[in-house]
Length: 303
Ligand code: CP
Ligand code: NVA
Image (cartoon, rainbow, N blue to C red; front, side, top):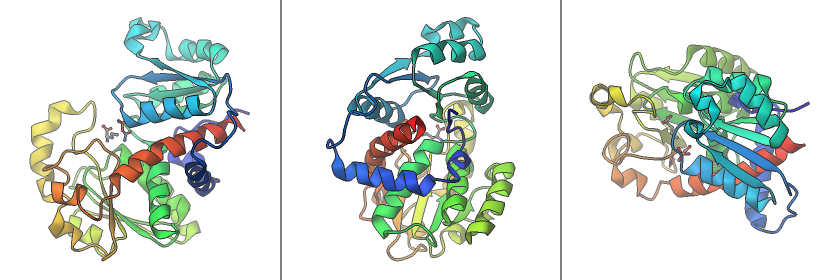
């Protein structure tokens, strides 16, 4: 049976295994068989991408296959062909589909109608492939995941939702600091709380960023204005100003805390230049890890 990764919860049984495979692929660099020889990855991107697109494309090429970048405006789906028919057609040509979409429901619709594995390359609800690289970076730094505390400060968006799901799977304690009305998705939080209680970890949601970062091992933030929300820019930048991750906020975290950001970042908005370019930042290791985790994900879905 084909397997999809639409939500971080789709890795409930093997997220840490995928992370460990990524760590071992990073060590081997080019020293592995082109096991995905002749495999095609169809890559549909409704929104721009640097890391997700290039890491997936590089990953499939390094494993012996080939990625085809697809802009929906150049496809018939852009002029009304259904997502279901697109999925059925691509299933006849390719071996995997990655899909960056505005709507989570469209990713689900594509996956339902595809005979080949579908990877959610970000939508309005989740960014599941990003968190594999995030937690890989945490494991590289601390040697373990279980029992670590991650504080996510800022918008309760797709990143926050997938980090909550991932933390609950891995036994990472997570605390969120988001403004009122911008908390993470309630259904995901509820599902994650059940998972976390089985794995011995906690999920806390605060509106005060200082409370969220208390004693944290990892401080994480993301943009305040996600792709597709540009009309809310002025309003959100005002509301989120107290949520900037700067030296003052970092001083409340653990003394060996690291800083992560999925990128792209906006210095002076969600993070100060002193933090993202400072000694605690691991954002470029995290970005590089997108390549190693993309390989591990493709290999895992091929099984
Ligand atoms: N972090 C991330 O997904 O970046 P891109 O939008 O560049 O893919
Ligand atoms: N929350 C951001 C993540 C970008 C990788 C967005 O959706 O634009």
